[in-house]
Length: 299
Image (cartoon, rainbow, N blue to C red; front, side, top):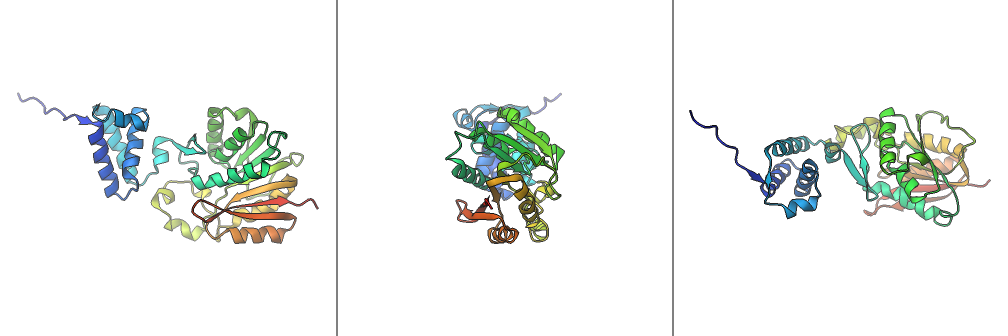
């Protein structure tokens, strides 16, 4: 009786090389980096450890699992959903297909908050509202940056709120964040005696007609409700402008992330509503208008 052929052992370096070639052939940018992140996830090690131990053998079960994850990525499933987390503000946030994957450009909202509040950050227990919290990244970073702040995070999705709570527990700020279910597209039903120093928002801003033209990583996997901004992409901004005014303290700030070519229309919406001043438009690292902030006037 002939012996069954033995499986040829695979080293970490050869497994990475093959995976990077496969990913690259499927038009995955940064194929080598993504292969390293997937293998580090499988082995539960740091990416740097793959280099240190590059000639170690990759055990069969882990090799099979690694191949499965590479195949998922080739089908354009986002890397963040495959490994279950994404970095934001140098912190790790758990994510799944129920929440939008945090983007680096959204850090501009936090940067603007820090700039506006730097004079009072150590003296004042701020009240911050995060509208459409998703994974909770904005609310949690705000709570970490302002240890005396009280934060309210709202979302229409119960699944998103559950993920946000999980991340808040992980970063040890759950005791200072109140999570509430609320549809931002309806009249807000927050207690009016809870006025806020600052309202943060990264609302859906993709025009409906453009959704089908998005990259498949986004179009086919990320939650549509977190992407669809209505016919012109501005539906959520109009609702937030109308509602936020009643929930901000005089001289309180409203800070938005905006999509391409939306800063001007959002500014016009604020001006048309009235009662807002110090409207500012800020660019991201690519020079695109990315953040709009404004202040509720005293009058």
